[in-house]
Length: 348
Ligand code: KG4
Ligand code: ZN
Image: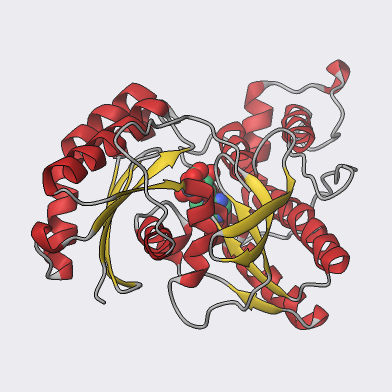
């Protein structure tokens, strides 16, 4: 049986479409929205408008690149949650309309589950059960995966996500949005041991990044003299900016090093507690070169099998929605047209 799935992703600021044929990605198209850069973050209303403009051409190109006509599509998968509600609604309504017009089944996908399933797009694929460290702009989770559709979140952030920690650091340093890739770039030239940022003591397998953000803020307000806010040594804007300029690479490397150790210490704890030795990473922050290298080294030391998706499957994309849609198709997991998009949805 040949199964062609068309998938649509529109949860944040990427309009994406993908076609998957029998579980293989045949096309993966993304239109990134540059308009948000000038605002230093994603503006929800502008994201929705850009999705409206992009969605038809992006789907057209995805079908064309896959060599597939719209009539050959067997089911339509879309990101139902979580995300910006206006953005989700554009992809969701488009998918529902297609499903109605083509009389083909509709598949609702949870964006975070799809990030994990991105590890099943290409060989070598992880064996079950595996642990996945899912690190994105809105989430930081450790997920225990028993099978493609059976997952449990066993740890997560109690405040900021790892991606937010990168982006907020970049903002404090005066770097443009999205700052994560820039922190990664400057960190390559710096010394990760230059400045010791504190590691929070959070129970169980949960994470916290808000204290780190405050620590960075105070550290810069004191031009590297202290992590603690002390009015007496708070320096002028000029002195602060001069400090940042002179030490940008070391600051980025040290912050990145701390974010990575927070993530990997919890992953190590999860591997010990569960006895699972197959580990993956997923989500936008898994594109970070320092994290990719550190998890490989840790895996070699601990005897883990480590799986890292290709860059294009780490950040938001529709291929991960298509593969999740494929597994849901095989499981007859469909929704009807009464389905609604939701900004937040518990899962796992
Ligand atoms: O998964 P994603 O594309 O979107 C969400 O679902 O949130 O993740 C976006 C996040 C942003 O915070 C971005 O700064 C971060 O991933 N990111 C990175 C890198 N590439 C993307 N963070 C650190 N280093 C990178 N190379
Ligand atoms: Zn994402």
